[in-house]
Amino acid sequence: MKAAVVSSFTEPPRYEDFATPVPASGETLVRVKAAALSQLVKSQASGKHYSSTEGGFPFIPGVDGVGEADGRRVYFAFPTAPYGAMAETTVVKEAYCIPLPDGVSDVTAAAIGNPGMSSWAALTERAKFVAGETVLINGATGTSGRLAVQIAKHLGASRVIATGRNAASVEGLAEIGADVLVPLDDTPESLANTFRETIRTNRVNVILDYLWGASAQSIFAALSGHGSGEAEPRIRYVQIGSITGNTVTLPASALRSSGLELLGSGLGSVSNEGLLRSIGGVLNAVVAGRLTIDALAVPLADVHAGWNSADSGRIVFTL
Image (cartoon, rainbow, N blue to C red; front, side, top):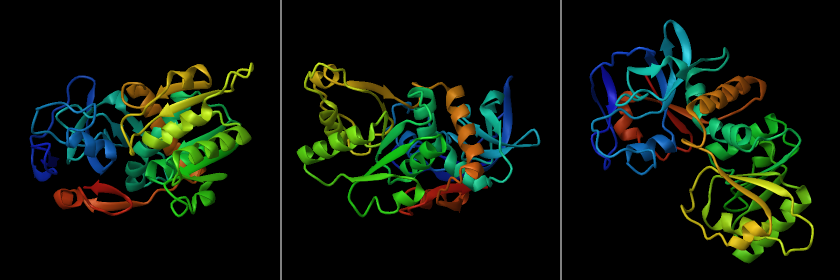
């Protein structure tokens, strides 16, 4: 069969021949229709993600996609290594296939599953979000962040606060549900003051962080109390991505003097079953919640050239 094949962490995969998989007991063969190029997939294929494994070349990239299994149209995830989603066929545990709702195209489903899951799982599986709470999304201008705004509102958030690198970047977020916009291009001290006022005025309950780095440190500074005698309100801070830095400086006093609860959401902190449950929620909300995502369909045969494309939409390789 034909597939995208990773032979080295130093270059994009190439469209080549690969042995056709044979399903083991409890697995099913999926004829792939579409598979999205997410940051997770790119990081794994370059050896930069914590779930990447040394050696084991060649392998097929792709953690999820859309296809046909046993005559059913399904969304699938976590193919059995060395097989990934970016191939004519792949092999997946039967439990890792979920029915694809009518009215959701192959390309849309493949594009929206992973980025939509990031906030759905963070809210429902990790933060145990309750309708009526207020959510702050740090880094709301990318694909996952924009979906997080829409998903938080769909799940019943009373208010959504969205941050972006500057005033221009957050333009348009109000149209998809953001109630408060916070540009991040300010001094750390001024930004901390802005966060402090915004968080207290809007009574933030949950923070979803796609950025980490300097903006996270400003949020920690904003949440730090001064031992006033009253307990600070509980805030569940869920770390999802690290676009602007992989490490932060977190003073011990920031935890002792606040209601801050640090959590993470991703592979390992949420079970595969929980991630699939979240993806199912996203897919079922596409029509009902009018979730939108910009997706660009590219033939898998063009994977080498399209891997590092600068296109602003989510690339979905199709077969």
